[in-house]
Image 1 (cartoon, rainbow, N blue to C red):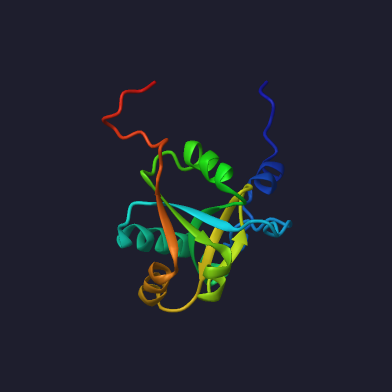
Image 2: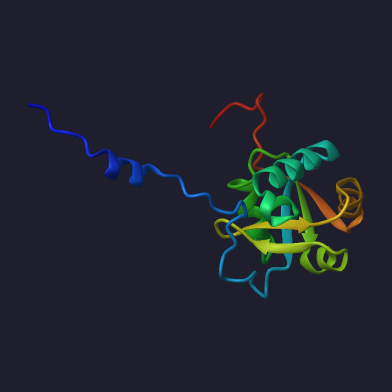
Length: 152
């Protein structure tokens, strides 16, 4: 005789609990010595638009647009990010935290360190234009491997 399945137990353990759709914000704040926010950049505003729209759809309960980035405290950390987290990008956009905050952007420590989200509200086109106007440095990522680059 086959064992009987207890459907009550199965049903209770398989219920999905609806959780608010907000990003995981770390308890630890952005370090005081984090001076730069680094984004992989292809210099195409449509890329930022798509990412912000996807973020808003995924985390609709948060009520903000969001763009993925990473914090860095110095050039060595920018270099590390370029070789690891951002190697798929040929260009890196480097923003000073203070400049982003002055322009009305929030920097949230999200997901795993050193990931951050550049968060903002308001009209998406206006805010992306404001982000483009924030002083920043565009650096060539020496670790980027294009599809044409032979693998090491």
